[in-house]
Image 1 (cartoon, rainbow, N blue to C red):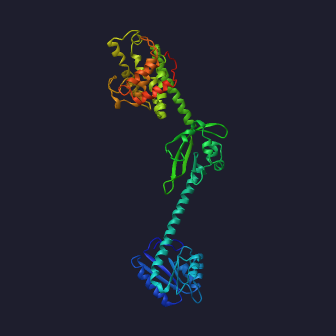
Image 2 (cartoon, rainbow, N blue to C red; image 1 turned 90 degrees about the vertical axis):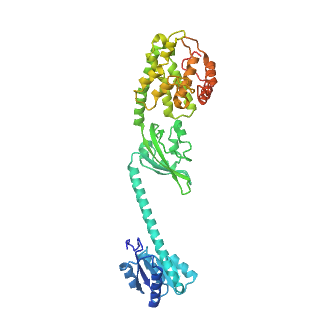
Image 3 (cartoon, rainbow, N blue to C red; image 1 turned 135 degrees about the vertical axis):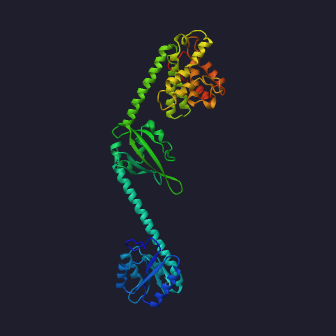
Length: 471
């Protein structure tokens, strides 16, 4: 049998029982009942009988019993002494007190002293049950202690890693009271605030977030979004840094959210690099738009105005920031294909011929061919390709219908129509916002997405203006 250092066991292939009994006949009766009662529960049962203090202590050391069964009253040795010595020299070994008679007060006294159970001799048939239950409890205690030890070791390793990490590691309790229960030492370097300052101020984690970013933490105490959160933090010295925060919910056995564990990383340098790349990219987009404006001066502000309105519509629709950026970029270059159209056609003051109009209708295709070679995080080329499509398939160049058209293209087509109708063109004067709203409203559901039309109209009627407009 696999044993631990203090006599516990890990299976029931065999059990060694130390009997502390002065009467041989009582000891034999106990052995008989136990052997019979444990048959089938373990492979073998071994017994050793002692009746005095000296032999008991020697047996504890040499025999290493799995359980001790002791008579309560003996001439030179008592059950209470057995309990006291066993707890001192073999604390994990269970003890069952066996006696001829025992009142309730004595039984309670034995249990309080450390006995696992007691059995009256005239009810000897209960002894095997008491033995099994005592051994089971000790095994459960050993397993629980091992689990607790493993957990403590895991927590120790976690704290060791957390305290050496450059990232800020934390645990924020939500119940029974809101507070930080752990903040790694790196907090001082990242935020300027020590862990102790976080412990003393449960709201510090929220207060150091830039006021314009605090909305990102709304509802965090009720539902934890495990996606990365990009936040600006204001350090103790007033410096603003960028952090990326990951949160993990902690639930109790009933499924209640009781804590949030997380890690925050200083990504200021990464964000600066990203902003620099974004600025460079925006410069390229602006250059492309300016090149087109040089060719078609009558639409100098068209792309920028369409982008402004499209982005506003996207924000009113609660689209994510990536989609908003896709709208802005796509709108800024949505007419880039007109670069290939002769200037005399773009600037023609009169009505276009059928052939000239067919040339104009090629600009989404040309724009797509130009942009598809550029690797972007958004489907800009496809959005540009679709911005003259219509829900009923009457648009161009591919006659796509409702479900085939990207949401971004549906937004830009509405913004494009409103801007074009409300602005001056070489072949007509500006028609104004009223005419533009009449156009999109009367064709909502047939040509244009009804929801987008509704939002666009509310924006215009709310006082929206273009950068340079003649409406």
